[in-house]
Image 1 (cartoon, rainbow over the protein chains, first blue to last red):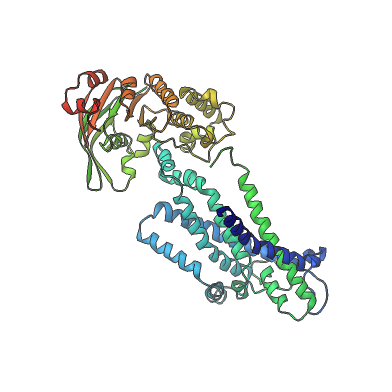
Image 2 (spheres, rainbow over the protein chains, first blue to last red):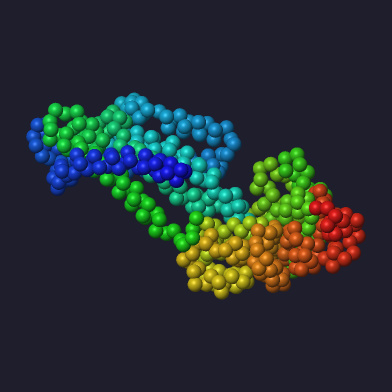
Length: 271
Length: 252
């Protein structure tokens, strides 16, 4: 009975994922060709072209977002778990992170538009990266904190008893011990912002031409999916499906790659 | 070489709880000294005051004087310096779970910035030999995690880790209480070997263990040290009635 329930629940968890993937392949795979990865979009109404600019743009945006969100997020998590425990500042930071996590992504886009795009620079890759990066921070911070708190007290004591200074023990022992969980948190945040469209509308803006410059508008896969899916042309609908498939594959590849690279050094019997 | 420890009117608190009250004793160099007493009597707190681990708890407080060799540890030095001279082995084996066996032993040196690989290799080998673990792990030094070893092996790994930084004193807080009898006897043999080079202070619940490994024994009760004398005297002819009651099993 219990086993049956467990199997059933497993099926219910896996089913949507499999359904999405199968449907994306069914709708999108036929439109994937060499041109899709190497060419930029054709003018409205013309058949063919590709999304090289959007794929590269997503890469640039996510790179920027990770460069901002991962270090700040991890540093925040380390502060919450190790240095600020019980202080008013830590409680304020934790509360802010939780609220930030709940802010709708469109609001984040508007906020970055108002705070960065209008006063400092025009629509650009940089402001898009900032918007996505800020969205990554709360997830990374809170998972880092949780993972650090799970490291047994005995491990910290062992380091301190060897005459290792506290900051060194935190960085080299506690963070290292918690690193698999911290990396998972970063990947979750990465995967979440990779599919965000709303914060990019007001910041990265989109670009039909090839551009990876940080100070100019840049294209991104979710933006193109959005634009093509509501267009009146069949060929653009097909390309939107293909782009959705590519986006999912890119996320899965990125996550697997990080898992592979970080998992290589793990020793036999390490927990 | 080990050095003696002189404790003068040591008091310790956890918040408002006065866990150690006016402790005075002299622990001889290059001998094993056992501390016995019922749970909660303050013996663990006492050893944690000897390497200033007590104060890592934010609600803890300590007063009094502890001299290790010529060093007044609460006046003349920083906690990290003391802890490099006073090694500690805990009740439950606590190897660093993500590190290899080699890195576990080398951790104290590496984390304090030591980088000479040839010397590190020598120190790791010597420490593992001193903790009687070398033969069992020499082929897997960098392949296996410290956490992959058995409980008894892990505890000997922790002893090797403590020895690698070349301390003068080795504190052991019930080092065998989580281990099976075979592992326990290995740890006891080890204490026997090590006490010629290090001053060893061992907290134990097991009175036979105290009798087997230690020359001196102190009996703690309710945060006070009731009696401190040669192990033989404590177990055959204690001066205090409470010590006699405890070792004959009338309480605790």
